[in-house]
Length: 272
Image (cartoon, rainbow, N blue to C red):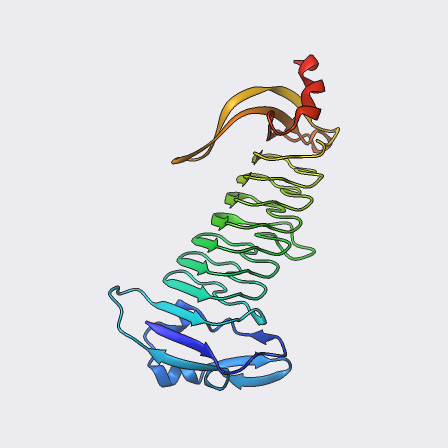
């Protein structure tokens, strides 16, 4: 097990995709300290920015514990396929970018693009997440393609944009455009969600258990459901209004919205 401790409060962005179980695998501690990172536009070695200590572990997989605020450190766990990263503090942008396996746990908040384009594995965030959770970069139309992201706090705008597979669970509130252009997968928001949910979605499932100001006019009411399956072992209790859309994209996505928390939507019932 490797433990990383920031040697100072970072003023400039740090790019450190080398902080990954795949990179640390089979390396001695001195080799890990010599790994290359960038501090702003200057190349550094990991040992200049982090104190690296090794400790015994009960598991054979590679475990990296990061102690302290690394909110300016970007791309931690990028492309990782196995192992575990635990961050005891806030983390920076692009956490777990395109990860394929393993697990990242954050005991704090995370910046934008966490889990961007991820293909597998699990990210669990015990604080809040920024914009574009699981979403691709501008100009890319393939978002999250597998895996699971769990956020115990709130998330920003465009969570799950262009999503193709996988599960995103938010136990707080979500910003605008959740599920923008999603093609498959599941997004669950336990509390409130801002406007334009599911805009241009073609398929997939979005569940909002809290307040939603309005449903896009390109969604049609389909029925009422008493409960909705999130995953094999988790169900959201309703009742829920079920909307289908986005019809502007010939979509067949399913949008479930809490009936109890949204009495202003009862006007749709006359269309059933």
